[in-house]
Length: 397
Image 1 (tube, rainbow, N blue to C red):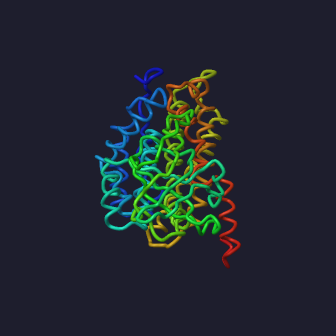
Image 2 (cartoon, rainbow, N blue to C red; image 1 turned 120 degrees about the vertical axis):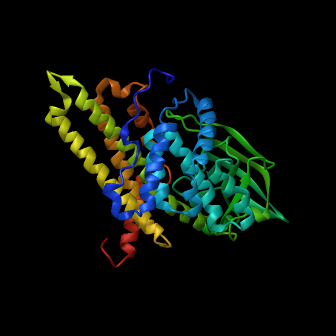
Image 3 (tube, rainbow, N blue to C red; image 1 turned 45 degrees about the horizontal axis):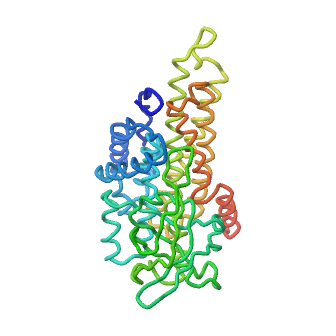
């Protein structure tokens, strides 16, 4: 039983379908898609949705261990972005909270993989991949969301340590993470070129969880404060002033996988809508026989197919060793998240009253999908990025 009623039968669309994107996958990716889908259907989908924020925090830690134990975080360490996308697609179809857990392991660990030394990688990445340590990505501030260069959190060198002061907001896993990848200014006058990045353990002196910021869909979110928070200088990732570039490179790698999560939610919604349209009878015949229903289903399926092609093209490009996939990731993220919003909304419309009952997976998706159009760069910012890339290029696309 869920907190609000009987649980619907898990949708068969939890496992990502490799056929439409087969050109972008190798054989081991196809096998991994099946493994990820089977795990998500067997272990994740049957779990009850947390009733409140406190329960969501407990559940996120439980999912961390389950996902890590199944080996689904391992593609993060290998920087195998196609496998990461397949994992997120499967997890998001089963549970948006499980997908968020995966996303934050990537965001927390990838900067350490890109710029951390062997000791930091052993200390944090290895346990993160195993599901024994939870990561967080602390960049956003009240006045520094899309305008990352405006962040006010400072980091001052004091001998063999840095002293951090400031506050971060809208931080996923705030209060439950074991380590935070934190962006702070080491030279305020230099703007974006004065931002550095640090690994801050949760038990660092001067780090405080201010409180939860509660979403309508279960997701641990909150504010963190740094008050004369001291971290060893060796916890700095890369050179001073290179944190902004490191953050962009991290988001460049992971942004397309946000699109994969959107595809997972959209696929689940489409599957639920098709099942309902076949079973539900109105005016003496199934909803599926009404042309207006068919039009919606056709549009949903087409949007989903296009989104998946953009996503897997982007992660394929990243896996070929491209230094930056800024244009591809921005296109994939903006299109897939916007398409998923439309698809989930249409699914609610097809399901009617049942689609807004808290016990139904489509309602859960409806409450979760909206955030994807905001985090890791809003749709509007992605479109500015796309236009900027096009205007700097000799090619029209």
